[in-house]
Image (tube, rainbow, N blue to C red; front, top):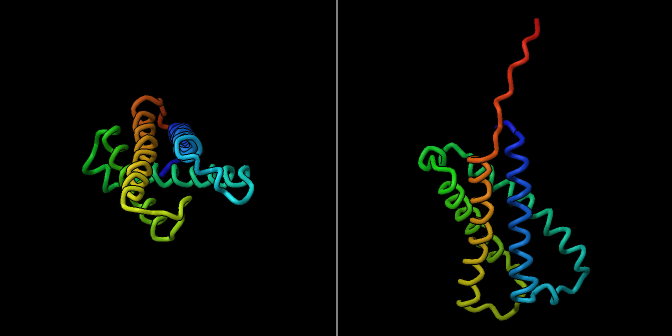
Length: 145
């Protein structure tokens, strides 16, 4: 895979928007971030790095040969990639027991799963739009004689 302007711009914008969605959900809507027992600045900085990694994995999933073969439309491919990455991430976090709350019930699990998938679908759609709208010329081969 060649990393291009399209890749970098889509990757960063997707990461930022997923991070903003994360902050909205956990910081404002659920107010979970007040339950953190250590530095909030450290937590948010590490979360930003994690979202860069998630966005990178999302982009690689979006560009995978398997998904590209069956879903050629970029926006739909972004949605499917976001769903797959979001559900996988939710499953890993759930199995590892990473949660802001101690009272985990079925409703909480479903809501958390839906939101995790929604976050990553947002990123996938951004990557899909990047594929459609960011001009990325094929670099000319430099001939050395």
